[in-house]
Length: 155
Image (cartoon, rainbow, N blue to C red):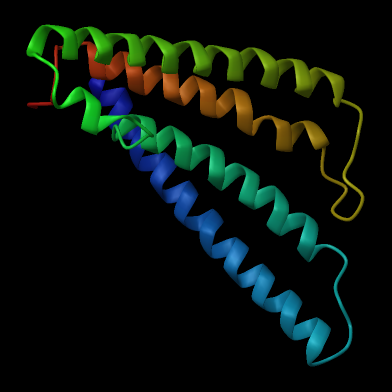
């Protein structure tokens, strides 16, 4: 499980990096086209929005894997070891439940938009909504991989 997790993290990191670059280049192109040539391109806003949605949800998944998501460290640091572990387990369960909700609602949204196409790029709208279940699944895998083996990776 940990090996699969490492491969997924590498793929997510590359995908997120490529999407960030895509957003930057497309927005820069849009600004140049609009203000230098007075000819805005119709697809750039849609592409940058879709890429931003994907990079945001992939980033959330990577944050879960790196344990960088929002937490109350100032409170938990002051707890004794046993209550701290209980709070950490509870937080783990909440994040896992959230990832399962993301999977379920994302699949439902994809099903609702199966026949729809985006206006400018003519892409399936379900492709955009696929970011939610993919991100939820990745979060769940990261959480479960972190629990198997009882702690930090050693291999």
